[in-house]
Structure formats: structure tokens, C-alpha cells
Length: 251
Image (cartoon, rainbow, N blue to C red):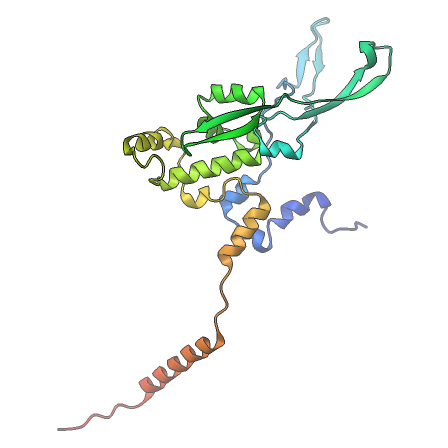
């Protein structure tokens, strides 16, 4: 006899269907769906079978991703999908010797990156792959806005994306207040990424942050009882006055 009504693996999914979780915006709940990130440390073959290069016979192959560990401090930078890889190496590079555990870590660099939308320079920990991706996207803002959540894999990156999307949605005049022509040029340059402000406010929030935001939106200040009874008494007196017979005097 099972100990639980539902398997523990389904608990997280079932939690989102009840209580305050079910009242979260649909676009935010959709963003919580798990998606496979772009492979970084391995190259998928994309086929189930291939010809053996030596014998020419058909053989089955599998795409087995390399387990990657993302340390907590990776959320404070932009690692471009890279992480820690755990494996083994041979002592003294000799296959006849013992295997030693080894952790491969990406090279981390401290760089200043400028955002046109936010008009601010950020000192961020990045990897060489991140710099290549920024160059491929033709700019820091384009990289942040184009890259999906699962590929950014960074709390800092999602916070920057939310700030950029909010500024594009509001089109406030705090950006280049002395140069309206340049401000409009920036807004038009990134116009393709504009979304409603109601959606932009939820981009990149963790589940705990989203629940707290929803709780504050639903929170109502308690109304004093004397006001409730006073309004009720006024309504009753008005109804009583309407029900009284009207006396008309004949002239």
C-alpha cells in the first residue's frame, strides 16, 4: 500500500494548483515550466542510430548530458550556461595509476558591461563564453533580452531583464532626460521586446517572491466596525424612509 496519495515527484506540480499558487498570473505559471537549456558542455548527436565508421554497421547511440553543478554564487553573475563539471583524472597522466577526483570550473572574469536601456554600467562576473555570446547578440541589452530564462540561468540576469522590460513598457522620461531624440531612438531600437507592464513586473521573480507579491496585491486593510455599522444603519434608514407612505395635500 503506498504511503502517499501522490508520488513525491508530483508534489511541486500539484502545489501550483491550489491555494495562492493557483491565483498567480497565468503567464507567470507558464514561465515556471521546466525547459531543457542549450547544451554547453556536450554536443548532442540528435539521432538514435548512426553507421559505425569502422564496420559500417548500424548502431544505436544515446544523447547523455553531462551532469553540471551550478554553485549558488553563479546566480550573482552571468556564466553563459557554464558550470562545474565533476569527473576523474589519472594521477601523473598515467592510465595504469589510480583515478583522482577532479572538478573542472569555468574561468571567471570581472568586467564592466554597459546597458543602453538602463543607462548604467554594471560590474559583473562573466566567463569568456558570456563575452562571446554578448558579441554574437550585438550588445549587452540584446543578449539579456534575447536569451531565455533556462539559458541565462542567473538571478542577476533575470532581474536585469525585468528592469529593462519595465523601462521599455513605461517609456519613462528618466532615460536621457536632456536628450529626447536619443531616448526615442533607444526605445525604438528595442521595441520588438516590449510587453505589457503587468507581465513585465513578474519576469524573473522566484516562486517565493511571486507569492509575496500576490499576497500584497490581495491584502486589504481591516475596516473599522463602527464604519461598517454606520453605513448599514444609514442604508436601513434610507430604506425605511422609502417605504413610508407619501401624503399628498389637496389644494
